[in-house]
Image (cartoon, rainbow, N blue to C red; front, side, top):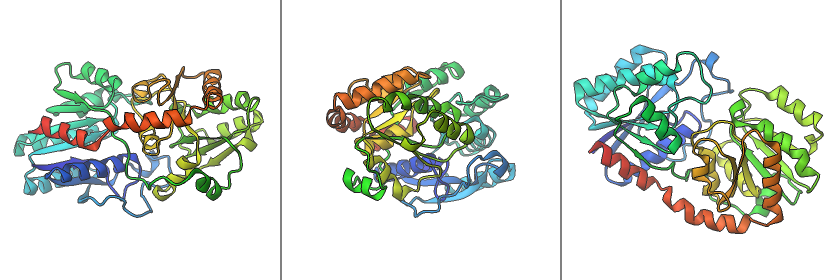
Length: 373
């Protein structure tokens, strides 16, 4: 089948680009002719809170991608359509994660469906954004309007989709494991590389915004440190709240126990941080699913998450990690202390190796085939 994935690809950075590359590889491995229609600019610089939108490291999974789209330049949307007109794809697979891209996606999908007869599949990370803004509902309706079918990856997103498209044709397939990163290294080696001497190490990973809930993990740290010696690694670029969270760490007396790696973590470094850690803690206030869980599962690392969105679906409580109430530092601290007191790392890691078999890219590729054939 002749397929085009519409979404972010290298040299753009981040989880969406990684997802696109792995989906490209999975579909290509099943014998499809696959191309990627990517962005030459995702966001105007004044709307992007990070330092750079580009990945400065090597391409980990090569993809056949063309960077034609500019999210705020309609001329590029029509140029992209004329490129599609030459390629004549059977279907377009749109990677949808926020309503900001709805005008671009709606224009390209309408043109491809109307003039090329292509099927339009929208692969939904989110339907309703984590941080709501005026116009989101209107843009979301526009973004979903011309899709023939959908893939959702959690019950939370399934419910949101049906609010906008009650008769939608869709499949629910869990978010696959991120297999794009370097293989695991021994814990002792990773800790030596990062100059960590503490016997217990926790990891918060991913960019930092209010809905990710890092504040509540920092507030839990004094309760944890009263009972045990632990090092918390906070790895990710601050998109907001840097001054407030650093002040919180100083004020609560935990600064010496927290290492902030305030930057985008390069792909080739990811293994060190995960392998140095005993457990990953994601104290989100809002979520649908989390790509960070799937990076942790790649390294067989247990995860403590909050009971928001699809996170409890991804982390069966007491099997591959613990699920706690959101916005509750005491609950986070209790879960961390229980994890270490009961020595759960080995059993949870063993369960992850079983659990993650259902998070396969081949299963996602089969879903794309089913909906676009």
